[in-house]
Length: 620
Image (cartoon, rainbow, N blue to C red; front, top):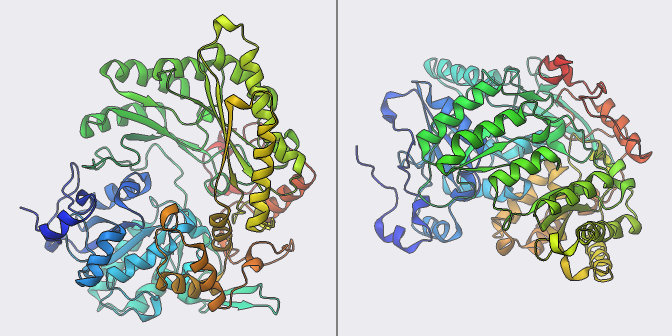
């Protein structure tokens, strides 16, 4: 059947990258919408190129469409040019596959990867002609679901969602869809469905909980309004990664997207326990996919997509037990066919240098280290198990192997950081340059380039640093300038460079990351004043956001620079991620005492994730 398009040719010819809106890509799923019971629109609230690069959506899209009774389609945020036309001509936002309006669907599932896309969520609802506030929705409106890492503190956006799915999508979605079908048969009522959905493990229905506040503005309690609604919402976890579903035929985009390649997810979770890292805490326990399963996926996915590149996805790939076997298999099997193999950040040792020299063009590619902090003292505070010695040894080995470009990633504004720690970023870069110059001149490979870049630290929920205070934008910029100044004083400054992020985005991210329900009005106000695509530098408007906070009576410092008491109730405390608050407190104290906690392979620190009975917690 030929696809009818929601947009006319005139419109498509006037907007940038029309291929974002026409669907019909290779491996996209075609079903007859009249022959299914449930229509599910899966949304990534950013442009097509970013959304199409997201693995989670590909997994869920595949999983939902394996059900005969469900048709899952995709929708992304229209870029500003089309956004204006759709508003002017009152064209409702549509799904790519059928080109039907989203408002006719049963569900709109939005994956929330980053706080800076909150205004785009409102854009999606608005353009879909679905009431923005959940309380205003009627029986005929889709059920709006949120999922992804930001749902570990859903409170700032709770008023826009009917329900949130907390955890990994592969576990209880079938139960939710079956419940919906059942309710549809019995004369559907939205409120009754939501009340029943709240009884499914991992489902959070914000409208069924009441938040009370203390006089100082902090949360007093988050309480369910009914007896049958759970007081704690338990994160969902896939215990057997090898048996869980994975897309063998991912959708292949027509235009260049951010990650145009086959992605193999080799493991979930991480054993390292860096204290700033939310992913390392919320995806515990650490679980692996077995080697044979991965080999099979590699064959099928390359064959079904025609992609010329394959990459491995995980938080800390060097910890995957069969990494050597897998990598050498990919090189031998597909390298000769001209398939590029791209490796995520590896610890730099003999094995990874050997692999990189096989898969990369050494002249072009650079080595990446993420020391995160300039001094060893700070690396102990954040529990980054990386010593200067290891970094310098790795760099020297790489330089001897012919590399001459190094990228270093740091954070500024970490808890307890001093000016000396900040200057340490420049000193470390200088020491790496010295390693290069220690090699006899005739053995060097051209000029060495060392690029350090710093982002500003944002404390995230469910990390030991959730108690940390932030600084003001000016203080962040001052620290970046201090580091830059120190770079200029180094002997080898000609081959060193330093870049830093914008501090204003950091402030906003900090407010939204640890915010509560009071922020929904500010987000709405910011959106109404024209804020959208806040994660894109060219469209981010800090002043509009600050005006929105002022107008809605929000004190930014309350969420950013205010010191938090160890026993304060956080807006996200009703979520049970397995890792306990007691463990986080212990780690926060260890950080203040500069104590290192060994990784999960070395010894168990009793974080609580073992209750999921999976992965590394059981292998040892």
